[in-house]
Image (cartoon, rainbow, N blue to C red; front, side, top):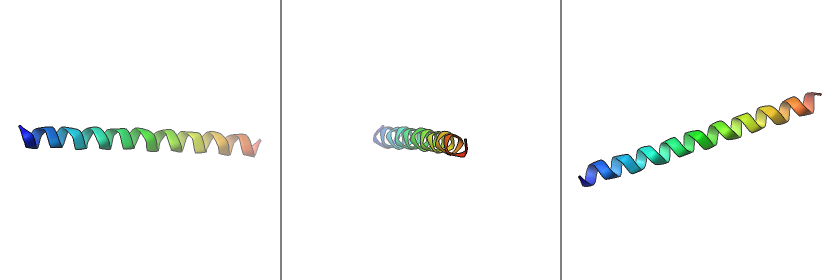
Amino acid sequence: MGNVSKEGASLAVLKTILKLSQMCAESKRKRARLEHR
């Protein structure tokens, strides 16, 4: 049980990090588009 809970927590953290990285990438793309105009 302990190991499973630890793995679940690590997976949740990785998922959140991936979401944040995707959001940052999208924001950078939007900024680049606005700057090009």
